[in-house]
Length: 76
Image 1 (cartoon, one colour):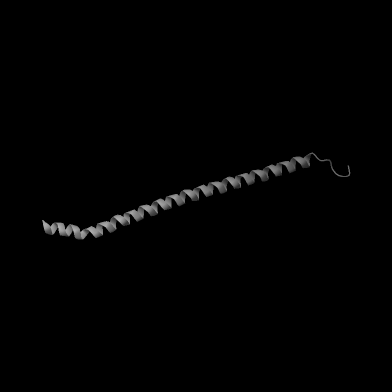
Image 2: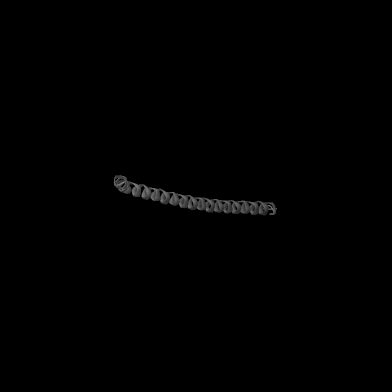
């Protein structure tokens, strides 16, 4: 019985190392998830800005075209 207890105590440092390693892995996974979420938010912000810019370009082009059609020719 004492021998079994001593073997259990001898394994204790390896068990502690294994638990610490699992903690490190969990921390790394959480950090990666947070990074992925932030990257996705940045991508969404960039896409929204790109869409707004494209809309402004289209609106300016529409204004230019409608302005051109309403003008009288020069010299007429």
